[in-house]
Image 1: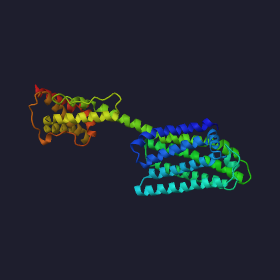
Image 2: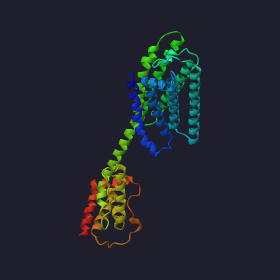
Image 3: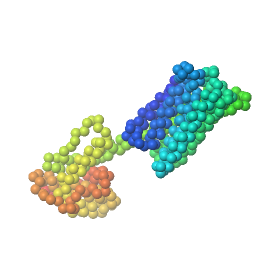
Image 4: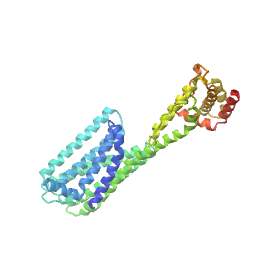
Amino acid sequence: MKGQDYYTPAAAMAIALAFKLPTLRKNWRDPLLRSVCALLTLAGAIFIFAAPPTIAAVNRWTGIPNFSAPLVYCLITAFSAACLVLIVNWRGGPPEETRRVSRAWILGYSAVIVALTVLFFLGDTPVERLRDFDTHYANTPFIRELIALYLVAHNVAAFVMVAMCWRWSLQVRGWLRVGLVIIVIGYVFNLCYDATKMTAVVARWTGHDLDWLSTSVAPPVASIGANVSAVGFVLPLVFQRLSDRWQYWSRYRRLGTLWHEVRTSGPTGVPGVRMAWWSAAELRMIQRESDIHDGFLHLGPYFDPSQRDDALARALGAGADEDTARAVADAAMVAAAVRARAADPEGRVIGASEEGAPPVTDGPRDLVRISHALRNSPVVAESRRQAALSGR
């Protein structure tokens, strides 16, 4: 693999991290988000510092032959710890227990990093090896233990990651499940990377030469695994955002009929806040709901519970379910109140009974039902007609 073959997955990690950072800024206390961002950061750093051009540059800057080797191995070990901490936080549970287990993994892998550093300086690696350090020094005292230690630590983390993400994917649905399955596939490639590296190193221990597994097979397998994992981390976030925005815009649009119905119910109309064209869909939806509730306040004195009861009975008699019938009844009362308010431009109607409260009592979701009923219900249309006739 050439330098760009390492830098490409590093760029993929950076893109994945870029998608996560806005969420992290809003919820920086969330240990799960911190774990994901740490994992993506370390994954990108591994590919940057594992690239042969970077290895040569670091060795040259430090003046120590093969200094890049323990640096990359320590990054891989820290990455393994990030995987395990992510799993612990993803699994959830009592916060104190989650923090305790996370700290245990961090301390354990920190000890491994210290051991790797000590083993490197105890060993002797005088000849710079940019691509085959693992196999070239596989039989060198202390360096042999260093190589085995980092491979085992990485393998344990990859195996647990696969098991945990697969189990989690069986308990969830939607894009989160798709993302978890993709992450599992990516970490299966990581397990294959460990297998090829270990096979090449063990071959050296037994007097055989399978260096090509370490130098030609393992790097592209790791690159594929990193890119696939990055997609798994990004996909649920991107599509969840798109789904949320679509739901906001859909709700905003479906509330349009009700909004137009009540927005002019006040003496001078319900004042609206001017929204910039770039305003978020969620903000627009909230503003529209606020306008509707303001309209209900202005219409309160004109609400007639008897009209609502009559509309409810007719909707139920037509075969509507209870929730739909209630929405139709509320819509009919709103429509009649709008007509009554229009027939009283000077606002002579004063006071409102307790029963003349806003018709929505089951939460904001009813607003969409009411809006739909205003547009489509024949019962509401009949209430409008009767209100118009009585106002003449």
